[in-house]
Amino acid sequence: MTSVMVKTLCNLEWHRLKGVVVLLSAGYTLFAVISGLYSYGQAPFVEMIYEMLFIALPFLAGLVLSAGMISGDAAENIQPLILSQPVSRSSLWLTRMVFRLMLFLLVMLLWLSLNQLFPLKAYPAPLSKLFLTGILMFCIGLIVTNITRSSFESAIIAGTSGIIIMTLLRDTWFATIVLIPVLAVAARDLFVSREPLEWQALMKRMACWFLGILIFILIITFV
Image (cartoon, rainbow, N blue to C red; front, side, top):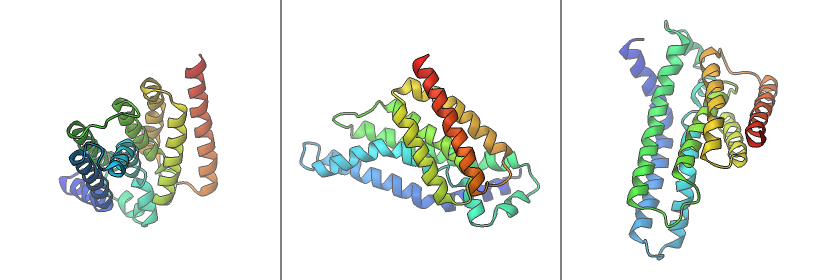
């Protein structure tokens, strides 16, 4: 893959994602700074929003930075053009995935940096678990983006899946274990997919996927 093609793919991803990245980063930064300036309980509403964003940012960043990658191509009818390029499909997806992962890590770096400057009074969950939540959502988004023809559908299905899975998980150790099969499925789907599936096939596939994850969680919980 030439440098021009890599640059073109990265520009495509940035064009799609810049609004979301700026909104997430700027919003979180704004409430972190305001909360830090009024750190003595003078702005409880702002502090509450900052705490909510602190919890939600890894989840949201992982979700929006992966769920629309391939489904966005299908929605915009540019997938045939992208797949017609004289390079392997794996190279195309890997380049775009790495770029999106870098954006995710930059958002997480901002998340950690602002937490150091403006720490919360009480943490609802360990930082490691929240960070793993973001990684887990990124992987789930890579799975779902292969099986829908709409970025909106991908985000809804991936977000619902993540909420269900994170509700069943109890701590960082469980999140790490569950991340392994999710990452394996994401890698498999990403590099062997041809195009998003139709709705009926999607329902069957998601049902099997949920059942497999549920069985896996039950095994590591009770065995």
